[in-house]
Image 1 (cartoon, chains in turn green, orange, purple, cyan):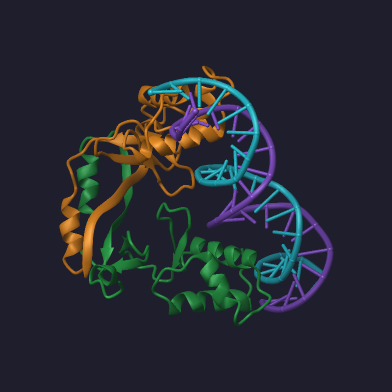
Image 2 (cartoon, chains in turn brown, cyan, red, yellow; image 1 turned 90 degrees about the vertical axis):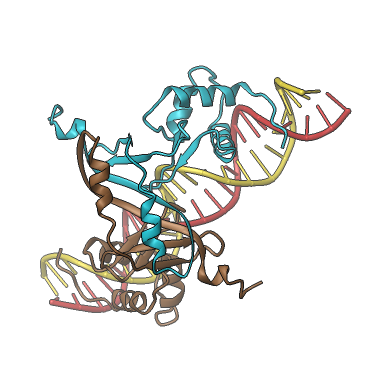
Length: 130
Length: 130
DNA sequence: TTCCTTGCAAATCGTTTGCATAATG
DNA sequence: CATTATGCAAACGATTTGCAAGGAA
């Protein structure tokens, strides 16, 4: 239980806090490796999981089979671009009202919901690429 | 492109239509195997993917690392029990209004959303188990 | 006879884990 | 010294894929 300091964990969290694009474990690994060459993927996974369990970071399971991590633990929604697969934050009013809608005809307790949006992101839509 | 008949595919779809609990590929395999002993897991996966691509069934990616399949392709929501992990259909009014909420401050096109609910299902809540 | 499907096994991918060693408190 | 953390490699679970053989049109 008692947590002991580790440079690798510090670097991992620091890196995550510097990014707002929700990197995958492997991207975290590739980057942190530049500061700590001998760090292992296993250590990255272990620390990401540990940090997520303690609520210091957020683990995003967006169904595409690869988890992403977010240092922003405040409640917010995400958007996934169907074209470039980027994941962006979505600042919007709470939609927790849908919980009441869901509860109306359900026999059981609904305590929360998972929601993400998709479409074409600003970059891809504006066609500044092609 | 042209699809040819196959008993395996027919049985897979038939089995899926007989269930409303959103079975995993492996569960489909275990069951269809009782009718077609030599069917392989690979064939089950291939057909589930094929049927999903053609829109004949729905593939549910609920983030837990194991896809589930649903023969009901009509738009509806799902509920996942935190206790028994069952997946249930949720009949409720459309909440597509959240798309407008999401669009308000977003630079890009939002074409859809993915939402599922979680909590304690009726069976687990009523405590008819313990 | 064409070419879609299958069975089987090997391959992939993301993630976890066992273990001996190193670092922290 | 008691524990927690690490690196490395092997293990895993779900899903995909290559290939030769089988079946539908």
